[in-house]
Length: 110
Image (cartoon, rainbow, N blue to C red; front, top):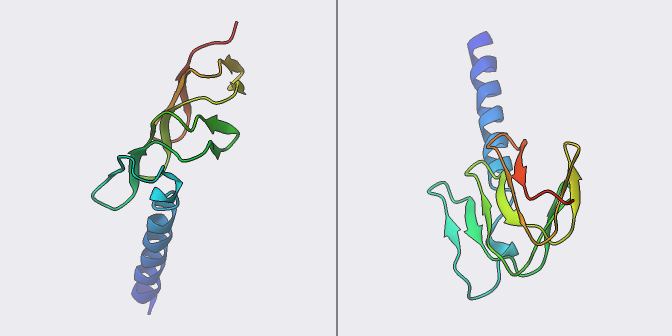
């Protein structure tokens, strides 16, 4: 019975992991634009049809946005200035993140 509970618990974690990875889908993309998907079906890149906001990061709607295969934001062009990890990032410039979602880089606002 304990083995069943362990296997069932692992399966539940796997299911929720898949749901989270596919949380952002191609419905955010401009119609008729190029959409790239990973083999697991999650969104890799596209140009969003409107500004895309994720955790206070507002990505410009006229530039490509990229995601990691786990659904985390990889990079985009900022639509508005943002302060992240104590650094002011300039609007209309690129911002990028690591696979785990932690801030990687941006163009500093002076």
